[in-house]
Every structure is written in structure tokens, then in C-alpha cells.
Amino acid sequence: MMTGAQLQRRIPYLDILRVIACLLVILIHTPIRQYDAYYNTPSVASAVYTVLVAVNCNLFFMITGALLLPVATSGKRFIKRRLRVVLFPLIVWSIVYLLEHAFLLHNFTPRLLTSILFNPVEGLLWYVYVLLVIYVTLPLVSKCIEAIGKRGVETLLVLWVLSSFIPYQHGMFIEASQYSHNMFGAFANYYGYVLLGYYMHHHGLPVFTREHGLKWAFLLALGMVGMPLLEFCVQGHFGITWQQHIDTVTNDISVNNIAMATLLFALVQRFSPKQYDRKDHAATATWWPRLSVCTFGIYLSQMIVLRQVIWPLTPWLASAHWLVDSLVSALLTFIVCFLLVLLLRRLPFHRFIVGK
Image (cartoon, rainbow, N blue to C red):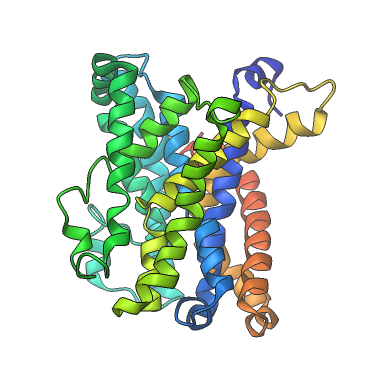
């Protein structure tokens, strides 16, 4: 259990967002067991599900920006400290997944090993690869933010949001195969979420004032509802397949993901307690921090737990509707991973396995 001093240094809304993001990551993976029913069969349920859970890792990037920008220490010290947090767990879990692929999944190839410096051996580890690059460059970005100021960050965020509309133009205005190669295709990329998290943490958004409420409601509705409706209901007339619809909506740098991330961040930020109060809210002050510190380990272990524990123990779920299967499997995976990480954290070298 955390001491009172440790508890007071934590930011409750960021703890809650970490847990939400972790659950959403698991939820995006659990429909894999019924791949054809979810990914290849057009349905309203799969479309809504996709829009709701696709935001997942983007919240983690926003939390990074909120916590670490501006960088308060020297660049060398910052990079050394942050790399120590994620690099060793990445190496450990890369080995774990390599062993799983070799001895349990029987799909190991030499290229899995030779490509490990540039591509993850397991798909979910992509986030850690991107995070390593962000950590290395964050001191430089911090200097840039100081130089351009609040208005400069706002300009970058507006350009980033505008660029996120481009993937939705395939079909109507550009060929489906061209949208990933447009001139703004990589503008800001995941750094947009880092800057958005920094901006919302330090400056906030005037979402809940009468003056700005309708404006933000319209913009968020356009992103979360309007653009997905355009994709699923209109783009189909231009030869876009259901798989392409799913890929567009789950694209991390899509306007619906940005809108959803902004809304979740703003709501949790607005309605979470400013500080933990162990006296009057003991459960909140105990469980949110405990779950939050385990989220990195839960993230890293989720796929092996899902494939080697949850699915073998729940064969009856495979015959249920894919939505039931996904929700139940996600809950069970989260619980088992949480218990696993709690056990691993008892080891003296747990920082090298599940981070701090």
C-alpha cells in the first residue's frame, strides 16, 4: 500500500484514465477469437463497438504529455530514467512472446528474431516502441513548446486535427489506396496526442461553460458520430469494403479517435477528485492507484494471458455472440493480468518485468 506522501503526489484523474485505457486496449483485442463475425460481417454492433474502443492507446500518449511536459530535468537524466522504466520490460516480454510463438503457437520464424530491433514480435508491443522514440525526443519537444508558447501549440493541434480528416476521404475524393500517402499523412502523428494531453492538463478546454459548450458538443459529435456515419453509410457506395471501414475508424490518427480521446480526458479530468482522500474515500484512494501502477504490466501480459489462459478455459464463450465473448473475455483477462502483475511486483527485480 502506498504511503500518504506517495498518494498525495499522484494525480487521480490520470490514474483513472490509465485504467480506462488499459481496459479499452484489451477490448480491442478480444474480438479476435471470432474474427470473421466481427471484422468481416457488416453490423451496427461491430461499428459502434469499434468506434467506442478504438481510442485505447491514444489515451496513454495523452497521459505521457500531461505528466512529462514540460521536461523539468536535463535531457540526459530524463532519457536515462525513462528508458530504464520501459526498455527492460520490453526486452523481457519480447523474449516471453518469442517463446510463446516458438513453443505454443508454433509460428516462429527467424525473421521474428532478426526484425526485433525495428518491429515488435507481438503486435501490442508497438506502443512501447513508439513510446521509446517519444521519450528520446521529448526533451527537444519540450524546448520547442517553450519557444512557440500556448498559441503555437494550439496551431499545431488544429493542423493535426485537420489532417485527421484525410483518411475519411478515400472513396469520395481519392482512391482508397492513396489516403495513407498524402502530404499530411504523418503530420504530428502520435505526438499530437502527447501535445493534446499536455495542453489539456495545463490549460484545459472550456467544455463546460455556456459560451463554449455547444461549440465543443458539435465538434465532438462530428468526430465521434458524424465521421464514422460517413464512413460506414456513405463510403460503401464507392467500393470500400467492410474491412477498410474498420481500418479507417480504428486508425489511431483519425478524427473520431481524437474526438473520443478529448471527451474522455475532459470528462475524467472534470469529475475526478483533485487529491486522494483516504479518510473519506478509502476505496477510491486504495484501488485506483493500485490498478494504475499495474496497467503497464497488464498491457504487456494481456495477449499471452488471453491466448493461453482465458480462451482455453472458456471454450463455451466461442459459441456465444462475439460481443458477449469480447466483454466477458476482456473482464477475465483484466482480472487475471492484474493478479499476475501483483505477484510479479513482489519480486525484488519486478521493475525489469512490469516497470515501476
